[in-house]
Length: 265
Image (cartoon, rainbow, N blue to C red; front, side, top):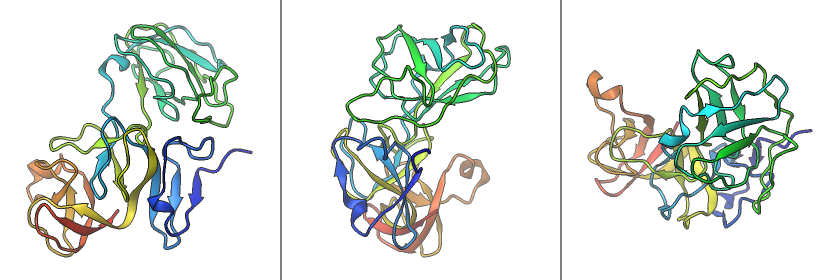
């Protein structure tokens, strides 16, 4: 029997923070459901302390972990060996993330596999990636492991620059940039979170959010393009709306640089 992918929170749990992930129950991305139906996701703060009521997003993909070269893997294998570019991997950086075969020139194209507990890997080293439930996973101090029995479904070839690592969007989150998105929006912490700590990021329901510019009740808001971690009124021009990520609508107005109440969707 697998571990649950959602947990029920009591009032006040959304303010809790932990120095370790409290694995294996709380993997990055686990859904938390509040007593009133509000929804949260469990995640880890990145290298800068988290600020309450600001928007956070997934870390940007590591350039030298994208479109790299894997060793051949056969159907039924529980690991995929990938040669990294000149950027190291920290232990469990990619847990509950994905390893994907991106290029159609590789026989294994179109498949993405879940990454289990793994050790650190040096820059330009070979990352032996354990798939979910792999007997070759390496349990770290945080106790995080995936359940299941995931294996390679279609043989993976040694096609150059065809396989990528995708981090879990709730592992080492960063503040949403004041520019085009670099990763999907992860949510809004309901409490200040120290560097590397774990806590709940709200994704649905009313939440205080830093406001950039003028907003009105009922208006849809998107990630601000000029203030990091903030929301702004959704633009009405097609040229800009296609690059804006809508996160909800206004239920209580605050002036710019203060905190409006946004019903997150």
